[in-house]
Image (cartoon, one colour):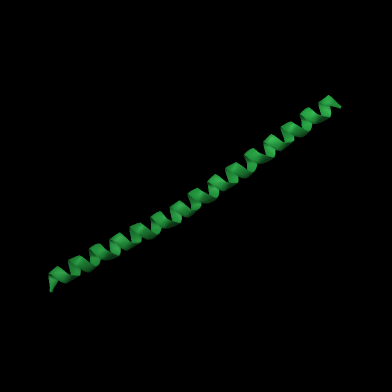
Length: 55
């Protein structure tokens, strides 16, 4: 009986770690998307500023 409780406890801990890793992965994917958007926005603004000075 005690071995079964230990196995269930280990399984519960393992499941919580797996979902934690998945959550962190999702956060990093969202951060990467925001970072790519920010870089594109900065490049567009720089191109717009350069085009304003050329006229």
